[in-house]
Length: 100
Image (cartoon, rainbow, N blue to C red; front, top):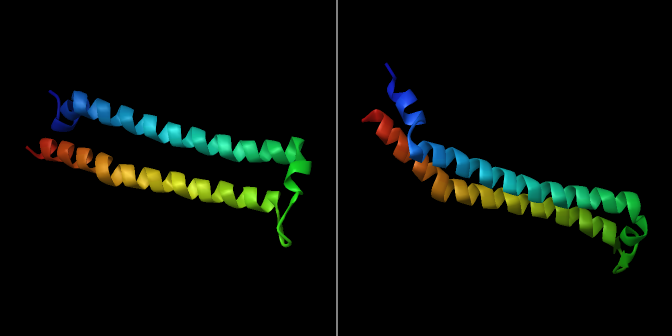
């Protein structure tokens, strides 16, 4: 005999929710890795690009570092907005199904 939770796991809505979460998470993770490792590879193989002056107080390396950090914050914001607008609503819908 299956419990309500086991029945819920077999629901197509649950499977779609899990699949969507993995797709969103891995897409954002891939974007983060590309930006981070792109920066690291630039440091390793093209350091002359990063020492170019930008203004009188900074260089490209510092700006690129800041952009990697800001980009990671932006990706986090995208995930939070998606989770609040879509994922949480679907989770609550499935919870209500479980309670019925």
